Length: 154
Length: 154
Image (cartoon, rainbow over all chains, first blue to last red; front, side, top):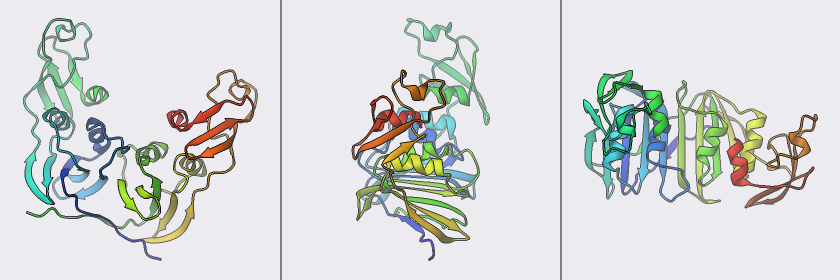
């Protein structure tokens, strides 16, 4: 009895997030709010071989395209990811996520005393000091955030 | 540009959990303690068509077989699941999970005053009153547990 190869069929409309940094597929799933309890096929592949990255993860979601805020979050933890928008069974748009040098509004500063956590109308703002391992520094208070602390917010 | 079908290759050794009740793949992943940060390919397919169930989920894990305690937990939330053990690219064993009529030790009673939650050496024990929706009743205090409360423990 040979194990059958699992073939996951094409989707009509949706998004394929490819080249996710290995180990981060479930974080991407969390960012996208996927519980699997709604309609639409979702495919998650973890730790698959990649020419570019060695190992990568892939998330494929039927029936939705990503919001800019979701793409910004994905960029933080999977800066090499590529996003393919599928419409009517074809790749309608393909782009790489890009980690900007300044992160505005996406991450909350981990320092409770930071002015960006006060009632003042101040948007959070971080400078990317290092992409891998991820390290960002708060513009206002200098607090350093790393990947684990950021992931907890998503 | 046509979207390529995502083909997930065979695994040498591991487990395929098929016919998971639709919407429960991520619960199975949690039960198995899969974070995706370790070696070994993991594939998760959610909301795929099934002749038997209408819609089903599938989880495929390379490099491990399941512990009996894990199978007992899966049986509670996906009582129709089948488990295929793969060894050397072949299905070496295939079984359906089975929800027993009495659940011993797998679930903690939700009633804090229950004797099974005391320091007494009493193993928890529940009777299955309904499989779908899942409803189990504590042998000791009569407390009824449903799927959501059970899932929180896993």
